[in-house]
Amino acid sequence: MLSEKFYDVLKNEGVVSIVSWGTDEPHIVNTWNSYLVVTPDERILIPAYAMRKTEKNVTQNNKLKMALGSRNVLGFNDYQGTGFVIEGTGKYLESGSEFDMMKEKFSFLTRVLEVTVTSAKQML
Image 1 (cartoon, one colour):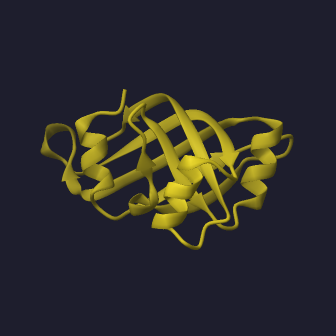
Image 2 (cartoon, rainbow, N blue to C red; image 1 turned 180 degrees about the horizontal axis):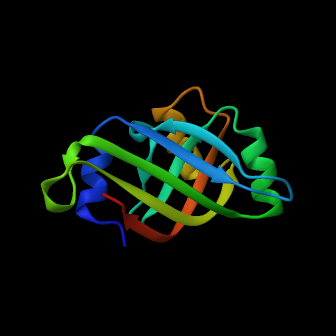
């Protein structure tokens, strides 16, 4: 589901916006492209230090949307820059082999946000 272009975007730094919503209005939190780790089965693992509102929302409604991009990757029609909207479901990991692997890479994390991708759409 995740295209080669998506992986090209991850190789370049950029902001990732994560949108969650529980029973209240949508909430947005940001991270960096370089913090996203994609598993062989195309789940996206994200180190979480704060993200407490996002975690609360995910316990009420596990749907998430993410937007990410890079101006360094050519998009449609050789447009300078491209981005993606990712939809999926989220859950937080606090232990296990994937948590340990992420903790080695990102010592600051307290939890890992796991996103199971249901849709990945290139926007530019």
